[in-house]
Amino acid sequence: QLRLRSVLALVTGAGSGIGRAVSVRLAREGATVAACDLDRPAACETVWLLGGQGSEEVAPGVTHAAFQADVSEAGSVRRLLEQVQACFSRPPSVVVSCAGITRDEVLLRMSEDDWDKVIAVNLKGIFLVTQAAAQALVSSGCHGSIINISSIVGKVGNMGQTNYAASKAGVIGLTQTAARELGRHGIRCNSVLPGFITTPMTQKVPQKVLDKVIGIIPMGHMGDPEDVADVVAFLASEDSGYITGASVEVTGGLFM
Ligand code: NAD
Image (cartoon, rainbow, N blue to C red; front, side, top):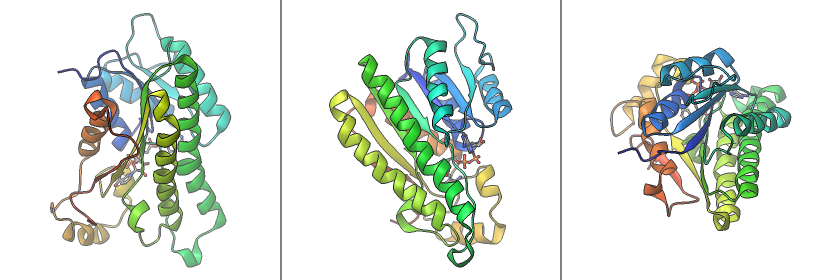
């Protein structure tokens, strides 16, 4: 059953890992996907995987399209929403913010630059995308579902990630507040908190650290990007029509 037929979905960080799996899953459920990434070729590759055009120059009748944007820059996010609306003649009603970065260092040695960069992409980026998407939906009177990818680290912390944990905790509060403000406009806002998922982001983590984490995951293994995409598809669909302000953990039971 195609739960997302006639839905236009904007996915940031769509060029890799969770964002790519989300794009594939939403398209499989019938959505038209606007795949955005800082890395243009990566976004185009995702669109190619979806069977779309792989370019911003979209021919009539084409379904999916790739867009380049830096979510940490207000002007870039504004242009992104304008381009998506110009391309598809409507605002996206499903918006999934997957763009994110890590710059790990223990608190005692963390540089101001590493702090600022992570907060700019992971927290300010989600503020900018959520705000721009909500403004477009409210001004056109459309309902929508906004899904922000946080992390279990935003709830429980993680060694070497004060910047990342703060950004992800911020995403939970931002999303809950947006849910309170936007519910009356028919816009639902939820965050998803993945645990340890096999993507290029976690490929940077030393194997002995991963082995330790796997040892305390009740399910006994790391998650796949598709495990997160399954939950995002549910939150995007009307199957979750009365769920807003939720923080859904996808962790294999890590940190109950
Ligand atoms: P990834 O590194 O595979 O993908 C992240 C994507 O975001 C990349 O394609 C990158 O180019 C893009 N990106 C980075 N900065 C950007 C910017 N300024 N503007 C636009 N795009 C930008 O990482 P992933 O593991 O797929 O992570 C996706 C999201 O899930 C992130 O928010 C991450 O924090 C979160 N998360 C991941 C895990 C995990 O275990 N992998 C766990 C919890 C949360």
